[in-house]
Image (cartoon, rainbow, N blue to C red; front, side):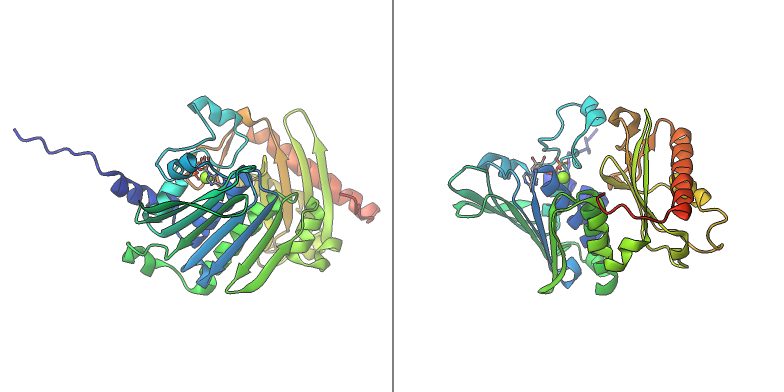
Length: 339
Ligand code: ADP
Ligand code: MG
């Protein structure tokens, strides 16, 4: 009898895994920006060309990597963020799978320049189709710059499947805004085809919302605040009169991670019941801080869906806190500018 099973070579396994992690340019943007946040950056710059199809570059001033770590970072399951599966339940970082860079490098041309804080020189690595084509000592600022060129160059079917530049750019901007809203203390910039799209100085939550969505937003915001044993809630909802036919701005963050939750969304809708017309959508920016041991984020590779231990309690708190805020605002529509 002949044996027919073989282990796939790493670059093949990485290309397959890449299919899950990287659907489009926006997926790369999310992974690279989250890595920059995890690296402790206080300034993060995104440079994109052709909606990310030809170039996505993220430059950060975070911790940087040693020459060995720089090389290792492109290996599959290589991560500095967890050591054991239990660590998932006390996670303070965005990343943990150690898959993103390996996946991205398998399906694009990647150039990394990185220098650790306090080191004299840095490292430059170039990768093509998952293989290192060159590594050298280089002069580069402290922190890390990763440029991803020609996404899906070796998977034409994927490349052809990408949507128009307009649609892909919308996705890129969405990811950029989500991370920027989650981390107002970090300065963010975004350039597209040489144009300055966003320039967001480090500030507070309210100011970050206003800097992204325009100065008129300020007067639309009603602060929401609640502090219970299981949930610390903060953020804003738009006043009912700003509900719109299109969905617009609806953001949940759990422990500073953007998430989607149809269930919690429903809690918000029910708080607006009777205050907005049917078929219109309220805007909201809601930040939930919960004990990390009560959420499981290890559900989906792109990690926008999570599982809560006690969804029902969160629902009830959310609903009543928003109702309370909307009620207060009706009596005294004074805005708190210090928040
Ligand atoms: P994960 O984020 O899940 O750990 P990645 O493939 O995204 O996996 O990154 C692998 C590792 O490379 C990270 O754990 C981190 O140690 C390092 N790394 C990636 N990006 C950066 C960066 N911008 N600055 C410093 N280190 C980085
Ligand atoms: Mg990562």
